[in-house]
Each structure stands twice: as C-alpha cells, then as structure tokens.
Image: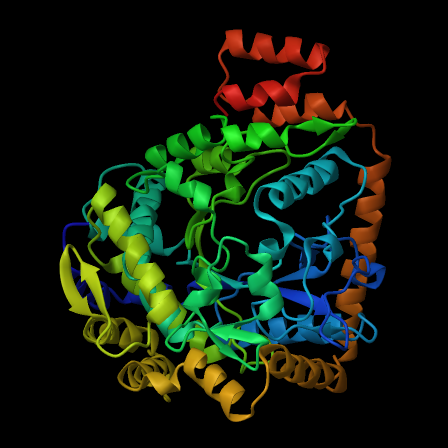
Length: 554
C-alpha cells in the first residue's frame, strides 16, 4: 500500500460500507493454562475425560503437556460475547478438574523438573501419534520446562465483505486472494515492527520462580535480582516469557524466515523443515523401536517456528500449514506475544481485546516496507529490550537505525491509532475503543500502571514469593469460576461437545490406519520431485523414511 495510514483511513471513512465492515472484524482467543495442584505443583494427572478428547474437542484441548490446557473460542465480532464465551469455558473446565487449579500466570511455579512433566497424548491414530512424537521431539530439543510456559493468542481478521471494496479503493488489479494475502503480510511486518508495544503494555511476567530459573541451564542467574531466595526478577522487566529466559528457540538464530511475501515465507519455512541440524542428528529419530522426534531438521514441522505473529489458514485433514497458505492464502492473523494477565480471571480483559483489535487494524492500514536483515535484527533487539527492561526510565529502542525513547515512540503510535479507535467507536455511545486507548496512554506515561509493574509491586509489598502470589490468585479465580455456575443451556452444549469429541476420538482410534512411516511420508511429500518421491517410497519400504525426511524439501 502506497498511501500513509491517515489517507487510507480517510478514504475508508468516506466509504460507509467499508468502515461499517471493519466494525464487524472477527476476533478469537486461544488461552493456555496449566492445571496445578493445591500446593502449586504441576498436575501429573491425565487430561480429564470429563473435558472430552483433546485431539477432537473444538474448544478444549492440550498444548505440550497433558497438564497444559488450551481453551479456544470461536471467531466472533463482538468482544463482549467473546469474553463471555471464554469465561464460560473457564467455568466448565474448573468444575471438571476436581481439586486442581488453573494457574493464573504465564510462567510455571512450584517445584519444576522435566521428569515430572507429562507429554500430551492423543491416542493411537496416526494423527494422534504424530502430535505426541512432535512434542517428544520438543522435549529432547528444548527441555520440558520451557514448553509449559503459557500464553494467549489473539486472532483477528476483517470480515470477508471488506476485501473486495478495499481492493477497489486501493486500485489494485491482482486477484482477490493475492491482494488479501499481500495486505496481511504487510500487516504482519508492521506488527513485528511495533510488537514491543504489546510487551510493554500487556507483559505480565517480570518474575519467575527459583525452580524455573534452575531448569533453564543457559540462563545466568547473576543477571537477576532475588527476593526471599525463591523468586528471581528484573526490576524493569515486562515479559520474561518473551525474553531469553522464556519461550525462545536459540536455534532459530541460525536461519531466517522472510515475511516480505507469502512465497518467501513458505520457501524459508520449508527449507527449515528439510535441512538437517547436527545437534538434532545426535538426538536421533529412533531409539529402541520408539520415535524420539519426527526428523532431525531445524524444525520438525512449521509450527515449531516461534514467532510473535503468524499468518494463518485453516487446514484440512493431513494438510501442512504452508500447503494451506499456498493454496488458499491467509485467512487471519495470530498474535502470540500476550502474557496471561495476572489481574484478570480469564487472563485477558475486554479492554485489552479492544486495544488489540485497534492495533491489528492500525497495522493493516499502515504503510509497510519490506524487511531486510538489518530490520529483522532491529526488530529482535527491540523486542528483547522491551521484554527485559521495558519500564526502565529513558530506555531507547531503534527505529530504522535511529535511537528513540520507548515512551516517545509508544505515545506516537497511540496518537496514530486514535482515528482507528474513533472509527471502531461508531455505534457506541460510550466510545469504548477511545477509552481503552486513553488507558494505555496513561500506562505509557506512568509505567507503574502496567500489569508487570503492578504484579512486581504486589509481590514485593506483600513479601510473597512469586509461587505464593500466583497460587493465591489461582485459588481465587478457580473458586470464582466454580461459584458462578453455567446456565443449563450452555452446560448442556458443552456436555454435548465433550461426548461428540469422545465418540470421534474412538472412531479415529478404531479406524483402519496405514503404516505410520507411510503416513509421515505422505504428510511431508507435497511438492516432491518424482526422483525424491521414489527415494521416499524406497525408504518406507526399508523402514528408513524418518531418517530421510531431513534431506528433502517439504
């Protein structure tokens, strides 16, 4: 897009159909949360059958561990309905986990060791086996403790009706799918460029437990301040989850994924899932007849690539994410850098959802130049600085090579978001988006208002360890959800989803399965040359498919 956001915004305002469409953008939440015992230890119990089958339930599943729940809302245009659905999911879950609690924070607490963390299991079907082996590979590559860090994903897309009119407005003559996808890629580049703002405003992991720090052998504890010998923290940190302490893959520094076009993105991801890495070769694929990982590639599958923002397209059965993107383009954007808000029972407030919607839309309408390697490095540095010292007075980031104070840049961005918030306020007498924006401007001017500062202040003022503080909130919120029961209609709807998921899970387990090695070869075989496919077929015949996968395009 060649026009600056103010001009594009004015063009949209002049077209009532377009801005009316944008008011009805779709939002969705994916919220991870650990099941813990009453003393803060991670649960070692299997995923409760009363919550359905994790493989087939549309809204209640697991992430890395049996103990790491993932609650998934439908896509909705109304943020209040979205918040209510997320609340209902929490109510249902909390009434079906017995005496256990849902952890009210992103970073795990309590006594934490790899040996006590159960990897999620998905049954005996080929798809279930693949999901489990992928997680087993993650455990060998990064350790299990890192994998049970929880977060929130915010999904966003304008309604489909927006795109034809917007394409006409921008005088673009390509096919609609290409226009939509290229616009989304520009949006992602802007979300990367300004992603540090999300960490500053919504980061809520300034402290971690001693047990967690000790599980991260590569982290130097001397760089942290200690409180009561049980809590490690950084005084100006916003999100240790998004720092090198947290959910970071150091191997990713060895390859580059371009977001300049969907073709570049797919090409680079497929390279990373096909090129073998020596350290992972040492792990091996098989041992004593069991899989240790899916392959020895830099990435076992595309989803192993850790990035704050992802382009997404719904996949069909046995379809890889890059195949879905290649065939049908981008459907929505997934923002993955949100910590669980310690001060909100569901981990995210309606106000935060409104700000994120405005931020997404702002990034979609903003001009978005391509990134070179210097821009890529600058983005990573800014994110790390915001994560570990975002609230530091006079902290400076880099904007196209020029130093700028985080506070000044953040205020500039919020001022530029004002017209977007005013547009989204149409039809609302109380101007909820502008009100939310003003609240975040206050948090920029007064860092003590941010969730990270409030959490750290509460911890130090009450003289509690991070484990004690988080456990208190976890008990409070779990009890709150149990006491506020679902209405009968909603409960019956969730009960039906549980039963349907169990039936589908049983059907998958009992269905005829091709050999697992053949299943994997089929999954990774898209785009193969005849010669490579013939080699793969031979590898299957000789039981060597998984060893061969790392050396081919996928």
